[in-house]
Image (cartoon, rainbow, N blue to C red; front, side, top):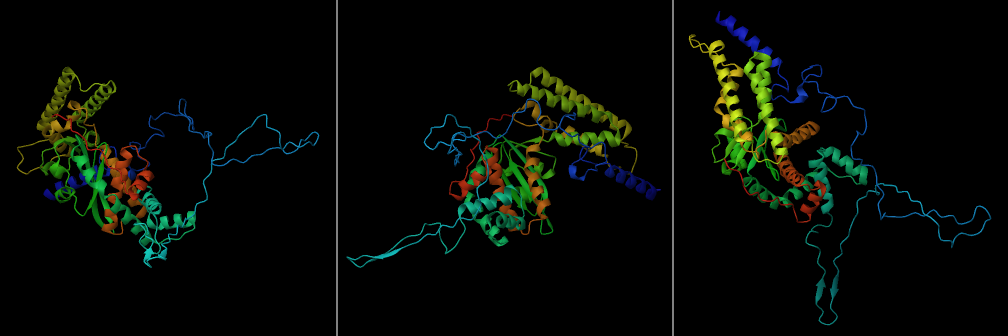
Length: 462
């Protein structure tokens, strides 16, 4: 009988796992079946039919004529088509203009530095010219080359082999993959002043997003960890996922604000003086799973409650309000407690069976319920503090491009290459968060002036 019951449990568990998708679990959308109606996305965000092309009210981005073109080619009649008289010295009565926007011819530009040696005719002293400090070898690549390589590799996520093709095809100049790695190493060295300021900015931020995702390093599973605020971001590649890696990142152990994350245990057990806020996008997916697989009404009620609470907070923020009214906060808290109470009663009557001697494994819905009870404050922090977002999407979006890089390249060929990628990616992500052009930020870095994020001043109260 025990063998039969175990077999039935395993079959049920297998069926539950087969029903998991991106709408009811943390599985990525790329794993969804294109034939599953529950995960099939509409053709646009609103799910409405609309005509292709520019929509009504959209601001056009067509080419506009510039006041000062780079060059002007004049087409002026030299002779009258009627009588044959010369028109060379005749002032035009009107001028019609058309402009063509095109790219210049791309080529490697070589600058030669010559250090002359001269002998003084008076005292016979030998005087030698001095090369610029950055010109250290008979031949080398310049700063714009290094910045372009970093832009293609880190921002555009191209693998080394394709970068060699791009440089060869566009500039007619073949380069090796070793040259690319050396260029990235030089850029990574030049952005180090930004690393210190970025860490200070994150530690001073009132709200911090943290997350992690698996990364393939030459066939071995590693983990990419991210911590970011509204103005700064830092990433770390580490062979471990949990506490060891979080300590190595050296952010959360010294942080005193509010950290937004999912329910990954090490974030809760790391210690430190920070408060927790939990990602409600995860809660919505888990509540969907609890309803679809276990048909527990409380999960539907909680799902609707979260969406309503999020809607009211969004509306209040849109009106410039700093918090919900005390009356509305009291209502939402009471409703949350009522749903939890109903769920607890349901489990006591229908799921939990203390009379059985053999311990029964808790269902997924019961585990979720226990977390919503234990971590109520972290779940509802978006209600009481408008600086705290409803989800941890910011961190997940920051990690998403790393997965794009992995899908394009297959894996990182070495831990050192992965470390360099994370460092430069952190710099570019920080620059983008401050509205900077990624290429310009890289050029500033190679010219000795890397972007330094502002150190945030905390204003959060718990």
